[in-house]
Length: 184
Image 1 (cartoon, rainbow, N blue to C red):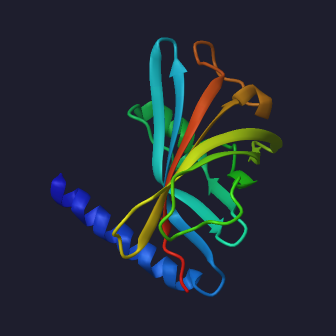
Image 2: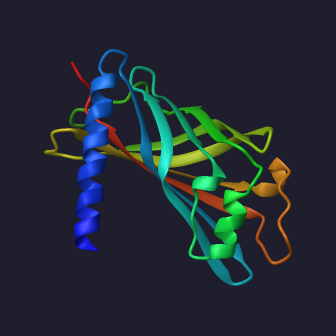
């Protein structure tokens, strides 16, 4: 298991490095390797669906962010729920917003508390959500500069998604994303 984790870690760093070369000219960073957790509950049980295939685009110059994923990429510990996610007709989920900082600093900086409004496109509907998070500098890394964490809550019924009895209507979304050093 440790060997597999090491291979995944090396592969992720290679992908991040390759993306950094394409990001130099436009000072935008993009990856398909962001992590997402969708946390909900069924009766008295917490259900977590997660994936490491979140698409993230960050504009360093103006601190705009876009996150995109399909529910089909999410996986839980329950096979029947995984089948429902794969066969979901919800389509792409998109979150677009402006971080409450003027630009994304990739050199040494204090932690930034993030709280901003963003547009969430889900199931053909658009709603404004309030997002919290942190941008934490990671010292002494050649490629990665920061860790970006975001979280927000939403009610699925606001997006026309009605769950069967026993499921809680409110879910929490958590995002974990590394940020590459800005090129000069």
